[in-house]
Length: 247
Image (cartoon, rainbow, N blue to C red; front, side, top):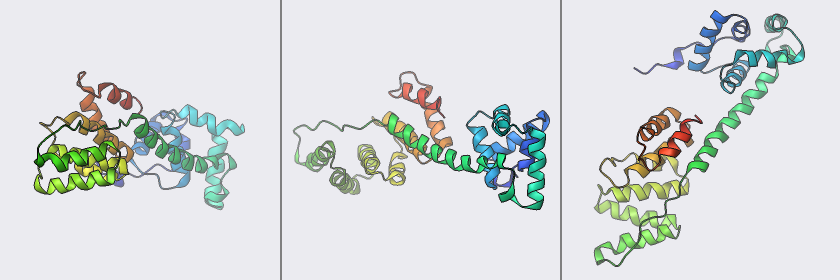
């Protein structure tokens, strides 16, 4: 059963601050931060700070105490500022939490882009040999693919797919063409084709995992990477293990 995180109320900034010195409260705060989407900028900043520091509340305490204010004083200033002036007048020691929310969000996006770029393997295509007239269109499309003319090769593969809608080779290379063109959503649709008994199963599964990652659908990506990592003979076993270690 999939849990609906939209109904989980995120902790307030007061609760986060109090949880630094209250272990029992900290467990509840940590779970709610993990499972909810922070609404206030300061809460989002704290959430992202903790995410990037393995939910080490001592690190958060050190960050907040860098101004040489005690946690108790920070909490008190936060309450006073909230009641009298609103968040914009909150103690200066907490202001950086707003800034780091933007910083970490930007780096989060860069993280997935970088992982995709670093672990993407360029498809070289299939060798083209002398063949009969029936294979002429496919060979021409494959030659265009190998020449990295992805627009023309994509059109050729799509024309063939109209006559052979269940051809796994065409679905795979259409998906790869779309990847090379940066059309991730369309590529995902092609790579979710049933490649169970296909020569391209391992390649398609790995590329689909990368597509999910770049689209920030991390849960779906992990499922595929974990599947790959169970098979030491899988073509992308090492890459899957390495990627899982970075997620």
